Image 1 (tube, rainbow, N blue to C red):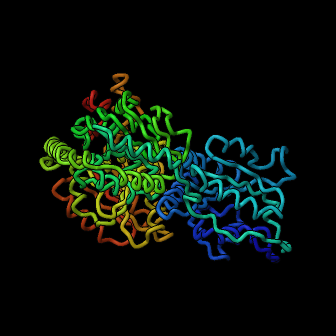
Image 2: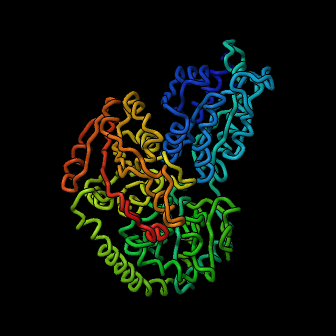
Image 3: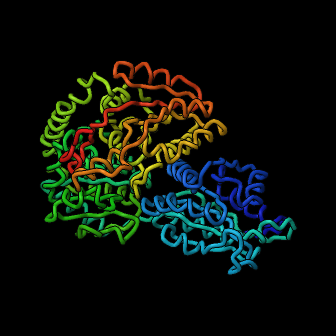
Length: 573
């Protein structure tokens, strides 16, 4: 610890601390203004969102891609309330973010000051940690605590409340700064599980007759792709993934099952390989919350199997499936240690099992391709089927393309019909899976990766939540290609209501919108696509254009993804 005495305003101290933690961008809308101005003076660029929830989604995606702890800012009162959806997604899906929220003056508490509310109670259900900075000599301490809380342990949101009287003060005080370390990266503190339990897990896996690895989003967050792929290939373990785990392994690998869980119904990529998961005798869960979607309402995974569970959060281990071996630790380090233990054991049994496993997976893939032909290769009439569009999109993607989807049907089309291979990255918001994440997430990812192409798919319902951010794209020079699936309905809601209740509410049907005109009104480019024969032509134009591009894709409103519940009810519209 090195003591440094400096003369700065309180706001300038905040900016200096953020710079120390590697912050390059803040996602905000001016407030807290003095802090924002100080950050700009310090070389930190503000990305000015149009609404707070979208700004928090941009920050989340930026952090997911860069592994830096992102910063989002907001004013007190109604602006603060709009941060809740994004922070809740980050809390549920274990992504770090520091939210800097303006607070009323300390002397105005409990006086019904303008936009006064109890922000600590507001954020208590969607953040790991919430504190109010009450003294200028503790600014540095509280900022470091916020970053350490956000990135440490199980990552999540940390909220700092900044009273305006403390930070609107223009006086340059003599501040004593003690701290020099940067805490702005995630994971902050990698830990490895108990070596004796890792050795136990290795023996259990090697002795298994029908082992399977089921990888979740924790593999991606830990950057453990290389480690899990090494174990898959060296020891011949078949690997399935959740939607958030898509990208953990290369789906062209002969031992990759694909995305499993609740999307294993008709035309699901893992439909024909489901028995490899449901009939396993040993299951290795890695960064997997065993949530409802990932387990198909807790029916996918076998109850009589032995479970090995790797997770950074001990409360997730054994939550829904009792763990025979608990491995609390970072996925990357723990998988590397598991690899070392597996290498000490006789692998003849695994080697002998590989040809049959590869043949089973190859057959399942072949059956899947046959089953989807009616909605991909042979779907040549209008309106366009989403499956047909995504199948054609596959041919236009770069090896390092970044693929983003909004929640609901959009995530399923990408997860089920695009392959994880090469250096592709997939971002599917599944913590709470609320509508409106996709497009702002694509924006945050482009800011994080200015030299890579970013492609987004959103439904018309989700896009309506955030289309105001088209103006942000124009103003900030953010260029992404976004497809809006224009079927004039809230598809998931519509079919779910019919499956459960035999009818749908009036909100499920959307009035026709011309999304090309919406894009053009913001000074951007739009293309309308209503003919399958023109998919290639429109994609070529979209990827060649400068700036953000919106493709208004007129889709078949009877296209239902491979969710068993929804496929039981496909009513005429």
